[in-house]
Image (cartoon, rainbow, N blue to C red; front, side):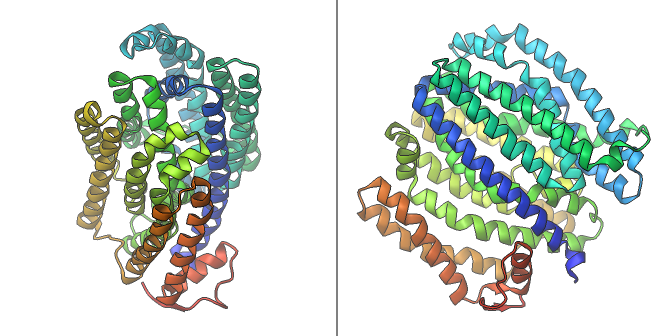
Length: 505
């Protein structure tokens, strides 16, 4: 199978672009949280988490899932040389979500006091009133992101999402916090950063996708878009609620300070999704354009799964073993309380993203939107029930167990469904060599955590030891295949001259 057939070049080149962007975004996101946790108390930060969780949940209703249709239908119309219909999809989605999101924003502003009463946080009403304007802004933001995904030119998405927005937000937030604005400073940085990135993104897409933007508008029948998007809209509602249900349950049973501490732990654990998030924007269109070729879909899935697991695994080991040290050094010692949260979520996120991701990217690309919806219901239901039962007993650790249980359930469901529906699975000998290389790496890192008292020393040495042992194990076990060498070359690393390799599947 040729390089062109397997899509390795596109996957690697566009994945490397998004990886760089995700690293920049991740570093800045952690920097923003570190800034927040040093200038405001855990209770104020927890209040901010509750407010943004409500906003992100409401904005899913605002866009009806329609942006998800862009990177599904636009690639197909472009492949068929119909740029006018591609433009039709983008224009119709944009017009619709602008209307619906504005209505949802108005409804939220009128009911903000209800949320303050429910969570027993009067200041939450003020935060929601300040942030209501971001609901239509987030709808436009999502339209732009999916538009960049659809043309597989993700360097512009990186500029918009991973550079402009976090940089502007960090600078504005820092200035406002230094000026003593507290919660208002957090809101101001969020709104200004989002606005500037939308303006920049719109200009970049107009420039880069001029073939689409200059084409004669051709209306597209709304039926297929609605049939594809509605199940995913419901999926997005459930999925976003699942991502924030922990905060809602913690806010209901505990105080906002516990919400803030849990949020920091969750953020560190979910940082492992960086590799998956780097490949998924281009992975879905690659699957969508060849969804009828089961053998090719499986080939692409196996390549992506192996690389996601291989790169993510050592970092999952690092942050699981050194969770308390990283939390104490990056934030403040009081956030070390979330160390068990980090360790548990790190390993379950690793499992989940390897087998399709929590949003069912592979299944979406194959057109199985209803299966994705059913999986997300299972994801949400498991998290809701387990968290609701365990948070009153175990606090933030109970919420982590709820999330971890849900991620394992949906990962297993995805594996089973892919195998039953299309006979697809990622398990090969080469996949196993990547996974088992983590055992000696974990054993090498364990003594550092057990015997070293200094958090700074642990943070400095643990990553080096684990990564060195992990890579050495891969080399010794002759784990590298020809496809690995090909992908590495696409990323800009010429491994052919010094890494042992074999054909493998």
